[in-house]
Image (spheres, rainbow, N blue to C red):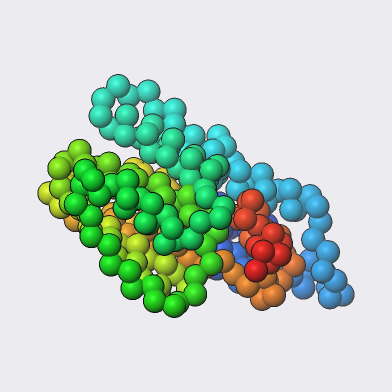
Length: 243
């Protein structure tokens, strides 16, 4: 059964990025799809999942990315929204492939430190975190966005890195800046576009959370089909092959 307003194919959950709920839903309906215990997921359903995610999250007609990129405002907020869309598109399209989290932070620090005071606290220790390609792109663009805001305001930046329960937390402290005005559109767009990525804004900081991808062995065939569409180029099968 589906809840009131719930898509019978679970597409609404993928569109909003609620993959945990999607996996739970897929587990309940897998037996109805393949009552004999088979693992086949129809190609039409796989294609539907890809089209829904592309439409609502990756720049399709219903995506926030498309709307922000098309903002025609000549004022400051309009410019910020267009710049945010361009930054998120870069994160999605050109995320580093062979760099680690520490590589990205160190490279950013070297570029930023000559003009802006930067303090980095690395508490990742030996905690395991295997980022997706687009998550590395998200980290790069978030540091760059916050660094440019700090540089424009002539204020320092504090960065703290921690890993908790398989999630990388990047806390970026910004001083004497209207952080919500400077970063809210970017953070919202990043969260609504990239998989397993949350970006939250508070009065004095930005918090980027990069969540670990699910273990493919724990997914039902139907769940794997949906999560694969959600991950895009970092899909379940390709992630499993890279481990």
